[in-house]
Length: 141
Image (cartoon, rainbow, N blue to C red; front, side, top):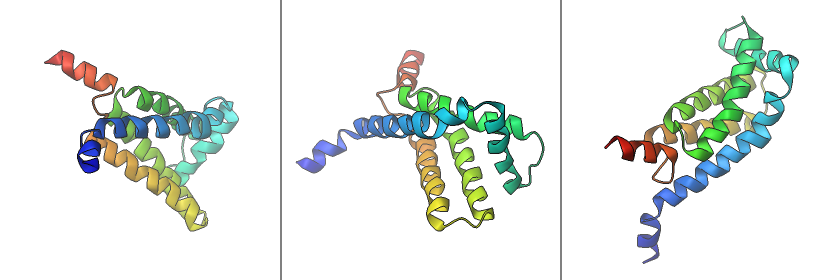
């Protein structure tokens, strides 16, 4: 009975996941980066050098900041979830690469890899029925 209950509530689970991850990205990851200004963006964009990209650190830093901040908002809303998750996954890949090239402790490497797996899963699963994506899809039919 309990198994049946939870199997019929998968979309609630996706909503909780999106709210939790999205809130974390808005307030823990994105807020300071988004409102840190050009100095923060340039420092943040320097992480791209771990992938061999050494030009335009200000641009890349701003892109990471907007991805984390706006991406968190979009995840909570369930709007453009698959596309947002792809951008977030790339950002986590860069974060993991930076921690690897800095020879940081494994716990710093694994955290972005864990989030990378969440975003890859959301690319495949989508936002679920409690989302703006679902409303848009329903109206298309």
